[in-house]
Length: 322
Image (cartoon, rainbow, N blue to C red; front, top):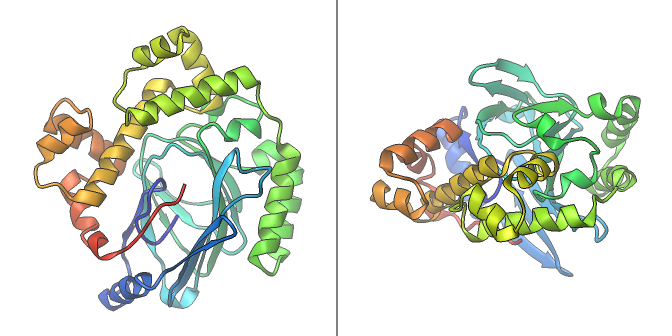
């Protein structure tokens, strides 16, 4: 979760604060600091009412984890509600202050557990801060989480569950230690120690198959059929679906749909196209109607509504380092 638009996580705000706070946020965000120290990319946004930071993982975990991010908010600024839409990355979250509340279109409002894992999803939801917040999240590569969790990841699709349901009493100790830490580096160190203990790389053949599959999907920007994918990889569709669902968390067809949606979303953010029909065709949709229907199902907004939500984006300089 982040209080602005950023690539991959694709979270955008539904402001409950005053227009003055929103304007203050925009002016402060334009002063965000980007540091590149010793090859380690760090993003820092130090705002009047929240603090957000990207941190790269250690060398041992870097093949599996894309980045960590940390967010803190103050109670004096009220609650901030944000929309979260489907992405290709599974995520862990460790709250060390008050957890967020989550609102699903069909499930109502519920609090997040102190620590959780979120599977790949094909639906949107809203998250809201509840007073003073502090959280660290682990963003896995699409092929990364399977190296830490020894069960089929499609069991987690469309849901977030407490890590205690997987690791029982062990996670309670980790949660307490993270809350007792006094700075970000010690919290990251505690999380990395936990992850290294759980690291058990999957079969190399399977991992290569999944990596090659994801590479092809992303090179084609989600504009490839599952059958074409299996043909290019010289593997049966049934085997590819079984491996993909278990190690990534969605079937190839479902994952392709998410990547195509992300590409369309990124295009709206970057270019804000005037003609949606052309944008739909360029992103592999049959027509404008198909594009609008799928976009709204995954984000809760029509493309035009989304463009109006991110109208401030052209004023901001937000860059992704991968």
